[in-house]
View (tube, rainbow, N blue to C red):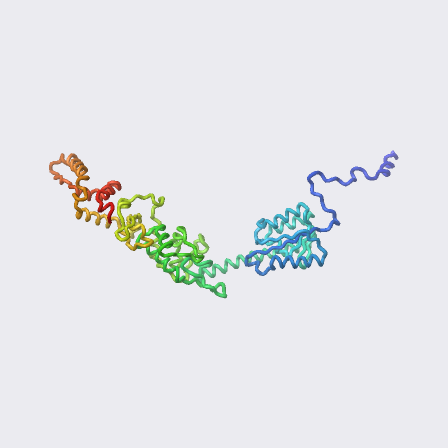
Length: 447
């Protein structure tokens, strides 16, 4: 029995006492006395809370001085222009954490703790790396943080203080914006037709009328209310006759036209934030009245949605403008009356109205009356209308006689060619109306 202790004394180190060899794929821990490999991280964003921070170049210069003084091994310098308010949103910082986990770096040099984190997520990642022992040290201008409970606690306090400042600043900004709205001033850039008046006190800036663009904006609303102009008609007028440009010297778009027509700011009210259902009365001077705005909004709200150019009108393609000779086009408009009913109107106008021609819009019923009067004035034989329509007139008279002739008490007046032409213009199909207009050169090729 004494042989076993003797063997143990001769071989005190068994296989159980040997250090284990790391398996394939496992990360090899750095030796305790290995020098720390630092990455210098410099960050600055353009947001208001970062304006007092040193520039990236100044941060690097400051920390390189510290590194030279303390003999730190700066392996790489990384820069980032991004806010640290939200976690996981900085690609350079995220890559830095990945490189620390892989052992590329074991330390960080930065100007201040808030350069690394202003949110709980990124702060937790840093502390977790320290707990794992892969992040040995964080150096700033006047402090050092290692895997010591007290130093990690201090790092968390400093970064949490930066987060608290961000949160409080956000609350204060929202409170300030609300106070500004209650004072009647809409925050942000004023809509087209107005200008932001600058002031040394940011909360006292006013919104004033733009003397160049406001008259044009007012005219847009009047065109819709008085003439039933569509958005595309207004857009052509803005880009040609009015030569309207935005403050950025760009042409306005169709969606921009509709945003103007639907913005209550122009009669003195505004919503902030958008979609928040919080309405305020502005102190700015209105461009239009509320009544005009409501009338325009009602007309736009009941307008049918259809593909542009798909609507067929009876008297288009056959008439020309008597002033400039260009073709005549038409638009269908809907207006909500005081009793709540909706009435449809068709307006005809010169297709070049928005460029050079000044002829006003004509309602379809007025145009029809003019055409009926012309039927009475033209020479049917000279235009060839009588000969071409005589067959149709005979068919109409025969039809009425066959249908109504059974009742002998009903006197059936015979329709002549002129009466038939008037009947078709009033009640016929679009094709039949165009046939009537096309028969006479005075209609088809004239004014």
